[in-house]
Image 1 (cartoon, helix red, strand yellow):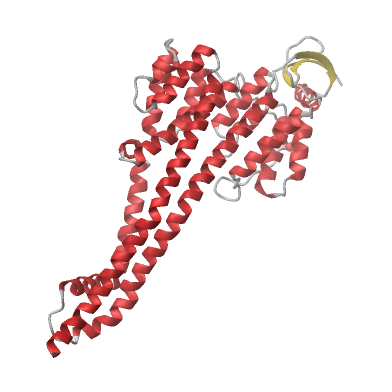
Image 2 (cartoon, rainbow, N blue to C red):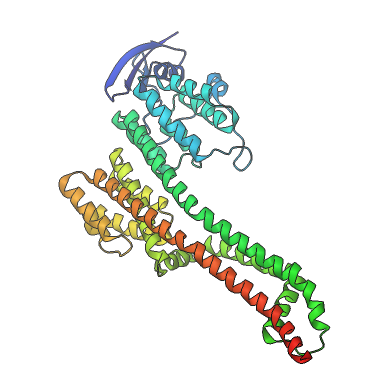
Length: 428
């Protein structure tokens, strides 16, 4: 078999060269990766340059391979929406474990083998096997991740690419794991804060529906047999109960139609922009939403910049991750200012979407040369404020729901007792 000369990067980013025996340049790239290196260029021993394999994603996607070994290593995954369901916790554990394995000095291919072996089957194991097949075929890790944008969004793949280029992939993976853990903690805090109020409101709604559709109709016949004009509260209660019992299907149709129409409207660009703008202008919730968007912005930017991603590319990725179209457009405008030479602080100063603390901390970070660290600290501060605000707001939900239920039950009891008092008065 012929000899091939390769140029590659080791896990510390240092350049290395050597010779390897292989069938062709694809097979040579596979063998170089098996040594724990990232191939930059592979050429045959005669000096004729072969097509570069597994560039560290700095120049785009890897080339396609047509040999038999590539087909052997590839694993077919179910189509999106069928069986390929990978949750965030699996991706988080994958990131943390991969960072630890790379930091321990394991080659890329062996690290994948360890992760595949300890994964309990399912779609995620198939996904890892497919990625390992791509890596064995000479592709970089970032290229393999780009094939699964649903599980590994652009933020993830671009940080891995920056780690490959800089030779600090293990450090970048650790940053990614920290970022995902913070996001998971924030998501869990929001869900735990909203769970009890949602359960309380659901029970209250079910109780009202039960009274209107089951309890009140049993008393309607008694009241109508009195032959007298019923008090106004009783008439309102019986009319509402009769309408709900007779037209419940119409009520459900209106509710589901409203939900579908709202989702359809918010899926349009104009609808989404109007709704996000409305959320930011709400009296109390608007400020809370603004803090949540700002926290996501500074944490994403700080993680990307700390991982070596250029600021313009980091702002482009962070804009998509904000979850608010109004803030996304504001950040894109700020990105244009940074492209023209402005500082991040001055570029964001044009919009009121970004909180003053974000702009001031960005200015301090730029002046001291510690922008990623200052942004991450700001994110921690905003997360604490959001968590405190959520706890205060959810603590008010319980008394409000209890008060509403008390008023409704009192209205029902009054509506039932008034006809009885009327009859007793007539008898006397």
